[in-house]
Image 1 (cartoon, rainbow, N blue to C red):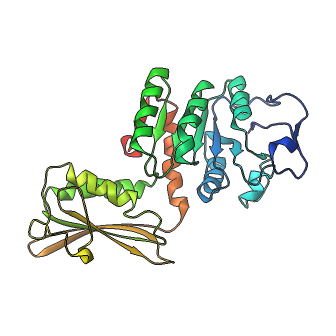
Image 2: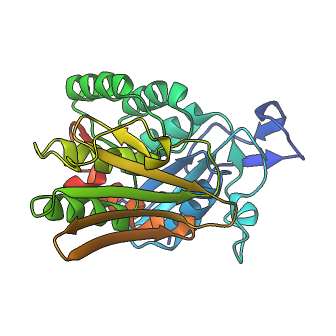
Image 3: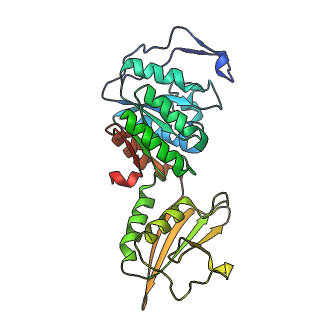
Length: 300
């Protein structure tokens, strides 16, 4: 399989000033036009490394570049503990990567695992080079999503913003919506290893989905004076309880109850690898888009 490579000469570099080019950015081997060229932005993060491994093994796509501000110059295959080096050095300048792929006229997708403050500029830059974007960045504001949507609409360029890449999480949300039509008592219980963001985006999204259905939940217990009863999300009585203990899996459970029964839905995440099927699906679908789509569930 022909792979897009860059003629870097690396000498224990810590930044791009120590990366020398033996020739202008170009493709010494033309990549297969059937393969989607994937740029992983945020490649050294845990999810970025998992994405590199998943994309390199997936049919119909290949890792074109690994972008990060850490471990610059190191081979991304070695960093990801793969059996063999990928001969793709980590770089911190995404512009030259996008330019190279654009010149090769290959189908390209930028996967963004960076930070909320950089997402808009990253998508704008990818669009300028004719490349689609998949964005999975927690805590991305709705204002940014709105601005991105308007930009992508004007540019007729596809972008998928995914609050979650977990197919299991999406299925849990869909099952909770179905169950909500049959029960009027519901509570969300989640566990996380740290308290960096609670309630979690998953719990907030589930509560938002349930609140949009016009139901009133837990009407016999609407009081918010007892803190041990958890936080009420929205105005429809959906409560969430967050348990934080090191070593716990990332878990979200939705408990419904009716006369004589309890119906529970639960989803556990034990490894970031669980996000990879959703990521590969997103990459394959975003190349057909000409606007912004919010939520991977649109493709399930």
